[in-house]
Length: 342
Image (tube, rainbow, N blue to C red; front, side, top):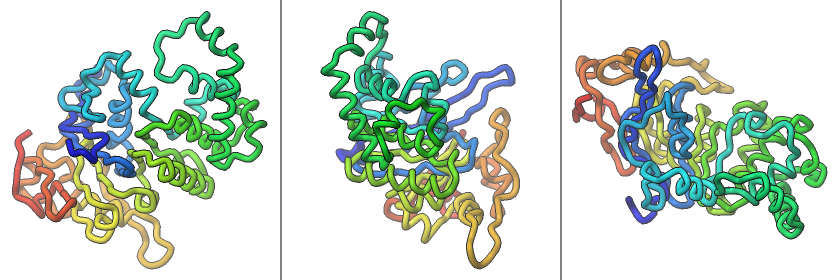
């Protein structure tokens, strides 16, 4: 782990054990997020991006999920070896999380003020009993401090009339306002690392653009490292310093953002770029076919059934992620004959 690395995932492999069999949804995945860096994890829906995020956060449902192999190093600590209480402390003090569906994560029966107070007062705590909750929630000094912090954060994410919003229930707010509230809650305890899981997907284009702008402004000013999950390459190009391209549980290409867009190499990356809608010029084209069945994936490179450049070796062995230029790695036999056995 380099001194600049905040989060490093090494050889992470995750299976889902179901009645239909075993599905390998993340296969030998490695990535890193440096301090103060926004890193994109892009790919089609169903590629394993959210499963990876949930594993980092320690909220992967187990069962059916099973971590077969790998390490998740955060500040040199392997999160996969920690007890739940130790992980909860780190998650509460160091991590922020912005999900893609704000209505799922905001409790509809409590006001925004109550939820932001609970986030501030009990973050990183386990097993809070009713008596302890009542004692803390009735502490006037703690409540005043928490509400001041909540107002400050709501103002920073450009929410008009934050006093009114604090007293509102989630159902009384628009989708964009709810997402801003979640960003404010994620940043309330000044985390060093954040995962943003397609935070603008459920919103219309104009509101989603505003949400991404608010998120970028806040994390850049606070110096927070971010793993930004998206299927929108346009958003990734604007927000991210580096990008990992994920397909069917595998990282198939990674590079600094500008390099990736100027010189994409993997056929899947090229297909994603061709799928981006264009204002002028040729009509956008999708990638033929679909993500493979995880219960019975194709042998060799998982992308080969959809690839226009498939060779015999692609159907037998999975290509290793090999460096073809400084910071630019690609897993494709068009650029490397290095192999790794499954």
